[in-house]
Amino acid sequence: MRIRPRFYIGGALIALAIAYLIVSAIRSTSEYYLTVNELSARQSELGIDPIRVAGRVKPGTISWDPNSLTLKFVIVPIPDPPTPIAVRPVSVAASDPVSFPVFCGGQPKPDMLAANRDVIVEGKLGAGGVIIASQVMTSCPSKYQPRPSQ
Image 1 (cartoon, rainbow, N blue to C red):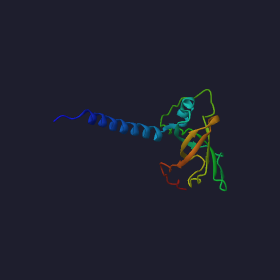
Image 2: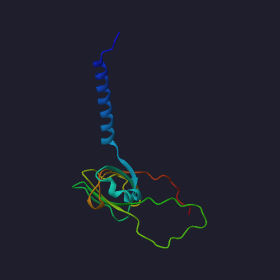
Image 3: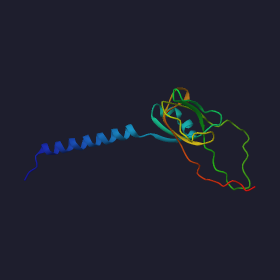
Image 4: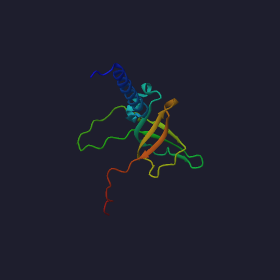
């Protein structure tokens, strides 16, 4: 029994349609997951792509307006954990860490948002390096330490 060419053409069209749907779904839902330093280094090449940035809330920068549901703050890099090495290199030139202002409108303020708290911000990079956030997520402290005994 001979399979007609129209079945081959029909099968190929179905396979191409499925491949197109998969590729377009991946492109529309994928986003870059970056740290603040990586975002600074790749800022020019990201354009309007969706991003997810991990950083730490800079103390004294949180501004929350409950009437308009507007949240503003600045994120800085998460510092490296202290190492138990006795001798540490000393940097000669101290510079301000890289930081990005974050603007989130129309969303409730996360309950655990506070200074020096690690956050993950999802959104897009706007003009002037401002992250226009669609979602702000806070993370719990990774280690709970008991209070020092007195």
